[in-house]
Amino acid sequence: MTVHRLSLIQSVSGMGRALAIGLFALLFTTVGYAQEGPDALGIQMHTQTQMGGKKPALVLNPSYAVKRLKIVMKGALKGRTVRLKSGAIRPGGQKVLSWKQSVGMERWNATFTVQYHGGNADTFQLEFSSTVYPKISSKISKDMVHLDEQMLEVRLNQPAKKVEIQVIGDDGKMMYSGVEEYEDMEANTPLQVHWEQKAGIRVLKINLRVWSVFGFWIGTEITPFEVDIPHEDVEFEFGKSHIPTGEIPKVQHTLSLLREKLKRYGGLVQLQLYIAGYTDSVGSRSANQALSEGRARSIAQYFRTNGVRIPIFFQGFGEDAQAVPTPDETKERRNRRAVYVLSASAPAKQAAIPRSQWKRIP
Image (cartoon, rainbow, N blue to C red; front, side, top):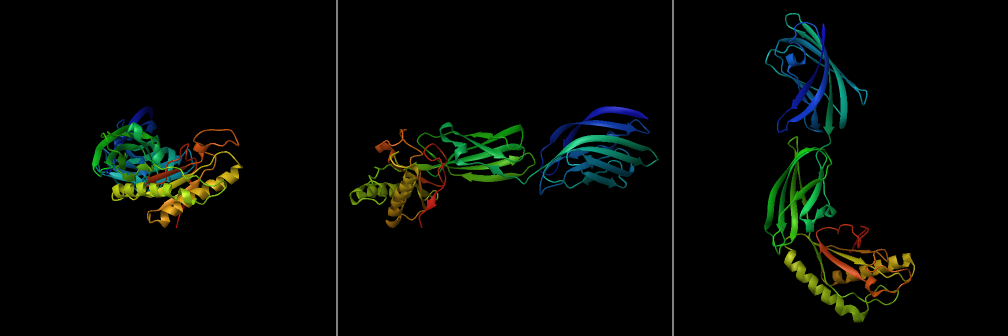
C-alpha cells in the first residue's frame, strides 16, 4: 500500500457554463496498480451552480472498467453527510453523481471506495468545496449612476463574466453600445461600466444585460434622466401653506415651463413630477417640517388642478436641508424654497433630498 499526496486542478463545465478552475488537495491510499486513484476515474467537478439550475456534481470518466463505486462526503461547515454510489461504468463512459445543496458554500471531505472489474480495489480521499449561488439578480439604483463621470456601478449576486450596456440619449436615439468583460470577479463585487457621451445629448435611459460565469443573465433598465424645472419661489404668508393670490402668476409661469418639458420628453419616457419644500430655521423643527410639506402639497395640488396628468409627488424637508446653512432662528429667504424635479423615478438621495418619503397627489 502506498500513500500519495498530490494536487488536482479541477475543471468545471456544463451547458452554457463557463469553466471554473480551483485547486484541491488530495490524500489517497491505493491498493493495486499505481495507475489507479483519482486519475483512473477521470474526476471532473461541477461545484459552482445556481439555485434552480444544475445541481453540484462529480463527473466520472474512468480509464478502466468500474464494477461499483461508493462515495461518502462529510461537510466540514454544516456537518452534513452525503452518500453517492454507482454501478458499472465502462472505460471511456461517463457517470454524473449529483447532490442537493442549499445556497452557500460547503467544504467536503470525500472518501472514495472503488472496485474495478478484474478484482482490483482502491480507496482514496478528496477534499473540495462546492458553492450554490442564489437565483441570479442584480442591484443598481440612481445613486450608482455617475452621469458626470460617464460611469455606473452594478452588483451581481453571482460571479460576473460581462456586462452589455446600451445608452439612449434624450433625442431618443442610441448614444452608445458596448461590452465590458471581467475576470475573477466575486459575487456582489461592484462592477464598473463606462460609456461614451455625445456632445449636447443627455442620457435618457440605460439598458444593461449582466452575465454570470454560469451562462445566466439578467436584464435591467434604469432611467437616470432628470430635469429641474426653473421657477421663481412662491412667497407664502407667515405660518401659512396656501398659495397667496398675488403669487399665482409665478406658479402659472412654472406650469408653462413644465408643459414644454412634458411635450419634449413625455413621448420618450414615462415621467413623474416631484416637488420638495423647505423652510428657514425660524420656529420649531417640527412646525417647519409640517409647514414645508403643506406648501409643497399646495403647489402639487395646483399643478394637478390645472391639468398636469402625470403622477405628482411631494415631500417636505423643513429646515433639514438648507440651501444656505444658518444658526437656529435665522431668517434666510434662500432657505424658504421649493425644488421641482421631472423624472422617470424618485430622485436619488442627496444633500437636498436626505429622505425618500414621497406622498402622491390623487
